Length: 204
Image 1 (cartoon, rainbow, N blue to C red):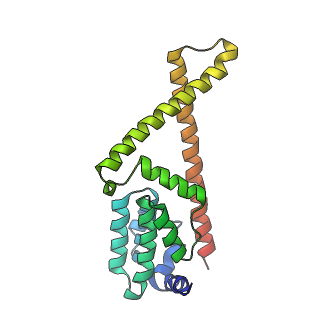
Image 2 (image 1 turned 45 degrees about the vertical axis):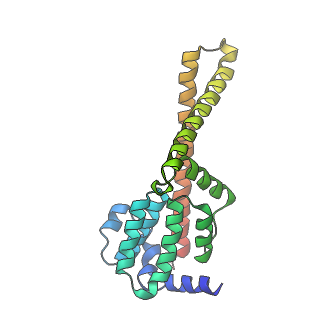
Image 3 (image 1 turned 90 degrees about the horizontal axis):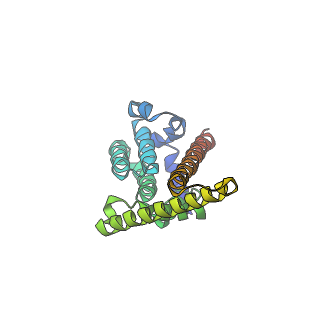
């Protein structure tokens, strides 16, 4: 508990204290930020981790570490640890790192989704076996979704005399794409609201 308080205190002073006021800025604005460069790079690293871009996240955090004061490095390293755990789809490490930062740990649903992402789209560091397994799982998932979409279209079209196999597969694929698109849109809006809430809650 004392370590968590120490981390929070370190993040409230110095270069990292500017993070809340910069979180609403775009990536382009953060790239050109010069006054609070360390905070800007930390935010860019966290955003890259949310996109599961491991290399970019590590690059931004290393740049932030190179420019920060030695007293701030433990807090920034802990922030980097949490972000890299997210980028590399390591839910258990993410939960531990978030708790050490004094922040709320991911929910059970978020942990489950991160595990699924780790199986379907593992990071490059996971090795060739994990990546091949991920490709096979993705193919199986696509086939299963198409089958569900096809069955749904058949059920809907049944009162109208049914639909052929070809059109059924096409409309089933279209239904799956629409559902996935809606889910992605809702997920991005939820992330944006969560980011805005964090910025508002952390602002003085």
